[in-house]
Amino acid sequence: MKTNKAYFLIGLIIATVLFFEVAAHADEYDLTTKLTFSQPVQIPGQVLPAGTYLFKLANNTSDRHIVQVFNSDGTALYATLMAISTQRREPSGKSVVTFAEQGAGRPEALLKWFYPGETIGNEFVYPTQEEKQLAQDRQQTVFAKDTAESGD
Image (tube, rainbow, N blue to C red; front, top):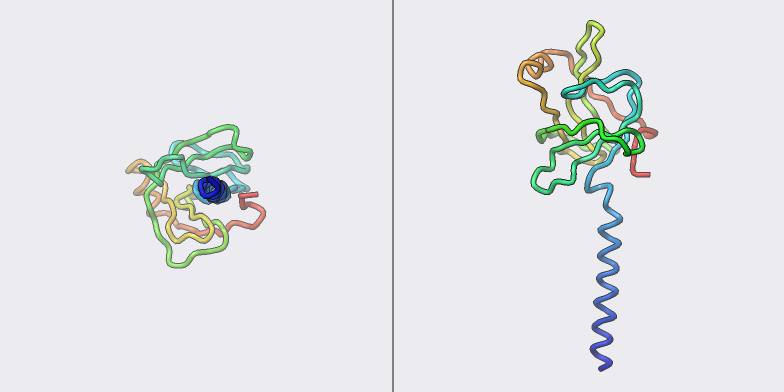
């Protein structure tokens, strides 16, 4: 009888530890990142005004490249964007984004987003004609400032 209680207690302890381990990594799973833009930024389908936004992966286990864009506190969804996998050589301790400078008073277009510490990121999918134009525009990679990071 004591053996059954001991096994039950051990099982309960293991289940509790596993539960808290999963909960502790919730932000890393969806890669939630807070980004602040000082100027309007184009994303596929719309332009975001200057401000702070949450970028995170949609809860979709079959496709890890669907990015959702929310307001700064995550209460309003502005966009759900298709992306493709993209790679960089070295990880960074900060979020990294790549823009295409479109010129002529047009906002910069957000092309890529990398979560801190990752070499695999998300490249946003634009309509074909727009994609061709963006590929010709000058591109700039920006490392986010610490104050723009999320997870806190």
